[in-house]
Length: 78
Image (cartoon, rainbow, N blue to C red):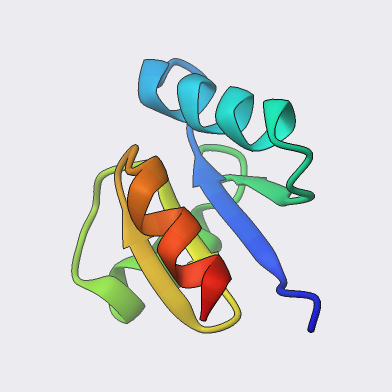
């Protein structure tokens, strides 16, 4: 089953860049939402996770906070 992956980022975040690089290098398709450009999406993320930091990754309803490749791979295996 294909999982929908959305990565919530900001422009200057080095961990966001690292996360996008990890996903791209592993041929894992994702959609990026820059919360600096869309403050309503940041409100959604905070409401869902209680966390204001980025990156945050939503994988078919499951959230991974921060740059955490191991957790992302685990969620993708489920």
